[in-house]
Amino acid sequence: MKKIVLREDQMPTSWYNVGPDIPGGLHPPLDPETKEPMAPEKLAQVFPMGLLEQEMSPERFIKIPDEVMEVYKIWRPSPLVRAYKLEQALGTKAKIFFKNEGVSPVGSHKPNSAVPQAYYNKIEGVKRLATETGAGQWGSALSMATSKFGLECKVFMVRCSYDQKPYRKSIMHTFGADIVASPSNDTETGRAVLAKDPNTPGSLGIAISEALEDAASREDTNYALGSVLNHVILHQSIIGLEAKKQMEIAGEYPDVVVGCCGGGSNFAGLMGPFVPDYLDGKKIKFVGYEPASCPSMTAGKLAYDAGDVAMRTPLLYMHTLGHDFMPPGIHAGGLRYHGMAPIVSALIRDDIIEPKSVHQLECFEAGVLFARTEGIIPAPETTHAIRGAIIEAMKDPDEPKTILFNFSGHGLIDMAAYDAYFNGELHDYAYPTEAIAESLAKLPEID
Image (cartoon, rainbow, N blue to C red; front, side, top):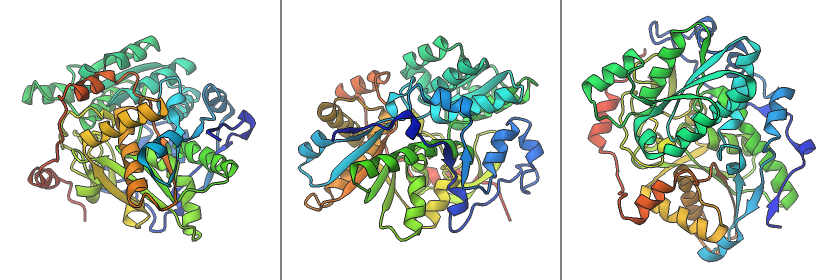
């Protein structure tokens, strides 16, 4: 069987919350001003209570609202696919499966959280959402979701991706969003960054600061984040919940689960529902692959840090390169983030997730191989997961094993990146250790 597709009536009706199952637990978010645990009332200034309850919930399963399920059904359940041709090209005895999240209306996994975030804001009377986006996948997803629920949307798009990916902007405009390049002149944060470096490529940390400033300046506006936070990973768990059912139908169970990692949502969404099996003694390996140019998991520090440059977010206990870390302008814009989700960071701490880094060129090479064998062009971010799956398959090509990876998005709007790759314009970049050390030296001091 090449492809396994669930019926709509087989869709999960609840999200899975991996937080309560993390052996070492999660550290609470801290107020950046007082360094004390953040009061829900302060977070409620930019988030609806429905999402805050999910962020801090001790419940393992949370029901998916019917209104969210109806929108999900536009593209869900998503297919689980056996990559037979890739296996043949590699000459491996490994079975490689991928969960195809590229079938969503905007081509990535991001609507899995954008839709519920728009819904919970809508029912609490919010009229407008402000957000950031790196590669444009989250901005596209939230633009689509807000259009479904009648909300306005303001997107601060990281400058290098704003320039590299014009058709992401077209998608957002089609769904009615207002988009500006970040750093922008629309906020004090943006103006300060531009005054210091007018040619900056921008970063997700800057764009988050701008979106938060925008949300705080208007009573009708809340903030929405596309990764990192617990409630985002909760929403993305529908990926892994579906995949478990599909693997069972296929008569298989993964020995290795692989995903690309930027903020951590797509990987955690796939692997999270398998964690209870691991804790019950099932032998399964979870491997997250990040870019060597932005190595928060493999070269960062597990510490409290802000999620943005201006330190407007709560301080999160996570793997971080420092909140003012400026990654190079690689084409995998969605992976250019200085921090890693607290849930993913805790699972690394507890030796449940194994983090690894890969270079840009080997990822594009893997993406081209995947396109020529499986017929789907992957997003630059997704090529990191494909490269990871290939590495895991080829460690011992004669060893039968089952590998599951998350195909987090297609690359049909990222062809400029492939042009640059074929023209020899892309280069590998390993961030200097001394520069990382300099950034980490500016972490907040927490007792």
